[in-house]
Length: 127
Image (cartoon, rainbow, N blue to C red; front, top):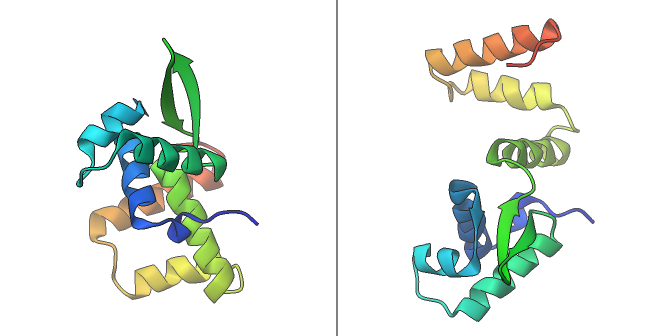
């Protein structure tokens, strides 16, 4: 069963946010940036769990694990929205987006940027 970002615990989400913010990070660096004091072993466990769930991967530099996100925050958010669409709208992303527009959750600039992205996608270009 695939994991959904919306199913992560509070600490897992905070650690993942720190990885996104830093790009590449060690357990020690995460520990120092957390909102609460935790043992480094606890932080390493959370990082390992996020890696097992498919959110992170690591390399080793001078015996230190350096963690990076497997995908950007935007892609992870898009997957979460897809999960919502699957659960509430029979998989229809169009229905989710129409609901966001109808609920006036986007300001004029955001709507214009979205319209530009849609136009670019229709033309086969990436923005």
